Each structure stands twice: as C-alpha cells, then as structure tokens.
Length: 406
Ligand SMILES: [Zn+2]
Image (cartoon, rainbow, N blue to C red; front, side, top):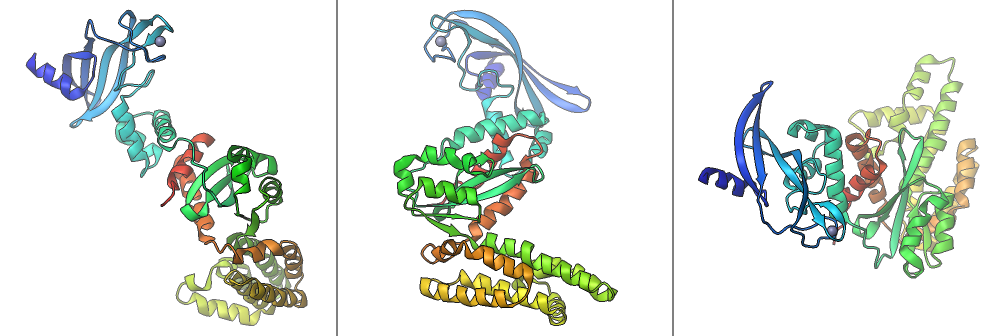
C-alpha cells in the first residue's frame, strides 16, 4: 500500500489513487500498465466554467499514454469523471495533468512538443510510439499556446515575401519585422486581398507609423501598402531583384546562346550545363569552378555582359547615398540598353518603373539576407512539417522559427 501511494505521488495523477501497477510485454515491447481509481469526496471543478463542483454525473473508462517509466511505455487506465455542473450540465472534470479529451498526459504532450523543435514529426512519433497525427496535434496545440498572438506595437519597418506551398500551385505570404528578426503574420495567398487581414489587424494608427515596407516587385503588395500605410516607403530587396535577373536574363541568354551553338556540340553542352555556375555568387564557387567560369565568359560575349551587369546591379544596393545610387543606376541602365541583348534590355526597362523602390533602400539599408534566410528556412520546415496538409501547423512552425530578438 505504501509503495502504491509512492507511485501515485510520483505519478502526480491528482484526484486518483493507484489501484494496481504491472509490467506486461506485448510483441517484444514492455508496457507499464497503471490502473487508477477515483478519490471519493474530493473538491472538483468544471472544465468548462472552472467553477467548483462536487457532484459526479458519471464515469467513463479511459486509456491514455503517459511519459515512459524507465524503459517501459506507460498506459494509464482510469475512470474519467464527468461532474454535474449546475451551470453547464455534465462536463469533464478539470484536471491539471490532463486536458479535456486529450489522449496523452499534459507532461507527455510537452515532452513531445519539445522534441518536435529539433526533430521531424514522424521521428518523434516513432520515438514515443504514438500516431503521427497525435504528435502533430500536440505540437500544434503547444505552439498555439506558446506563441499566442503576435505583438504588433512599435513596428516601423516590415518585410514581405511570398513562398510556395504544395509544389508551387498555391502561395502564402509571410510578413516579418526585419529589425527584430521575427515573423509577424502568415496567410494564404499572395494577392492584394490576401494580405489585407494583416493591415486590418495592425489598424490605421499603427499603419500610419510604418516607415518602410521591403518587398519583391509584387504589384499587389505595393498597392495594398500604399493604400493603407501613407507614410511607408516601398523598398525593393536585392535578393528578389537578383533572383529575377537570374531567371529572366542570365537563363534566357544562356539558352539562346546554346541554341546558337547548335553546330558546335561540345561548346553547346558546356553552355547548357552552366546554369548554376552562372547563378552562383563568385565567392561561393568551388576550386576550379572559377577557371571554368572565366573560360565560359571569355568564349561567350553575351554571357559575359549579363554576368558583369548582374554584379553591377548588386553594387547598386551597396550605395548609401541617394545621389550616388541614382548615378550608378543611370550608368547601369545605359549599359543595359546599349548591350543589344534583348532579355537584358527588357529587364532594364521593366526595372526602371520600380526605380523609386530601388533607390529607397539607401534610406532603409536592411539586410536582405533576412528574407533570403527566411525563404531557405521555410523550405527546411516544409520538408519536416509539411506533407501533412495542415497550413495552420506549417505557419505556426515558421513563426516559432523566427520568434524575434531584443
Ligand atoms: Zn460548468
């Protein structure tokens, strides 16, 4: 009896006594099976209205999982009390160690959620021998409690970016506070109406306090910010402009050049296979690749031009003085138009329409690596947490990865 009291106290199943405890082996797995009985005449509370309530309405036998005891997986079998609440009617009893209708104890749930911070849902499920859906729901509930609603006070600058969910068929938008490196909001879609809920949440006063919004050249984002935030400068970030340049100029010129070389198969193969070599930053090339790149550029003039102008485009973002940035832009623009390379000319003309947003970065020189970093992190989270077709959970994981600094 004394021993069982000890187990009961260790177990922390408040409101219950240990009736029996046995180790059983099923299919090579060792289980600790604990039977609990209800303590009579105890003060109870209604889980719905939280008022005290002594009368029991009925009992329902439940079987839930708890933390492992040493090497044994643990199951608790006990009658769950429904109190006869005078205000709510029959309701499950409020217990500190078990949420209403939960399949695992609160401490097992917290342990699962802690492990989910560093491991994929499927691995956590295997570790605790739980269903992956249970693990996902536990982590989701924990994150919802832990993160709560985002604090939107005192924000002066926001960064906005879209990312693909489900192989590029659907998009979502993430809004961040770059200075504090935290995610403020995530929502489905990448259109103007899709991001409106964020500005509604922010409200007119806080919208008016926004000084800048950093984004890619998404018209919907720009129009919504301009309509809602009268004092916010639109700033285009380098990462997206350079990525667009890579797709629309470098890739295009490379494919055109490969087609020109149809009669020279070895050269054609080199040009065709040089996609990553051309898109990578020069300082992240592997040994030997720099020589390969130099040879490629020397033999293909149009590729050389678009490559050099990409670096010159990046230099624009290094400028901190608007006059110098404007001068650098004019010089870049002239070179692009004179190049005679059609994809480059087209890109330059389109970019010119966004010039104020490019020059605005001088006033708000934000590290664009944050947006790039978030973009990359989202891809990792997608691999770990998605595939479950649960956007809300996916978005919570992204928020949890960028909780903010300072
Ligand atoms: Zn009640």
